[in-house]
Amino acid sequence: MASDKVLHVTDATFEQEVLKSSEPVLVDFWAPWCGPCRAIAPIVDDLANEYAGRLKVVKVNVDDNPQTPARYGVRGIPNLLIIKGGQVKEQIVGAVPKGHLVRAVDGALA
Image (cartoon, rainbow, N blue to C red):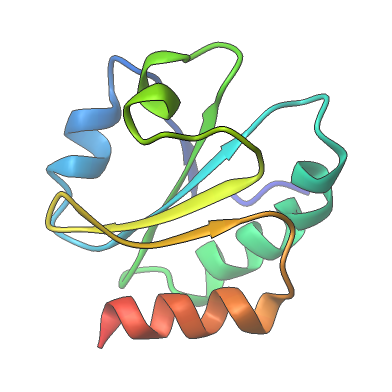
């Protein structure tokens, strides 16, 4: 079940929702056909709920929005970025364990 705390953004809304966000943002670049993307989706949803109010969580469908992944050099998915103050603080490629994501998020929030 997808979390209502996860926002779906597009190439058109990325700058406003992510780069201009006052809180750090976890960006999940994904596609519906990507098995590993589906595998980590529940973890991303969990993080959205656990860090609500401290971290914004967004998803970008790479098939529908090719400009933003190209701008960040996304070549494989899932690809997660942690962006704080408009700058990439962390990049995580592939389906990783939840603990790995938690450490990355905690590091960006510190």
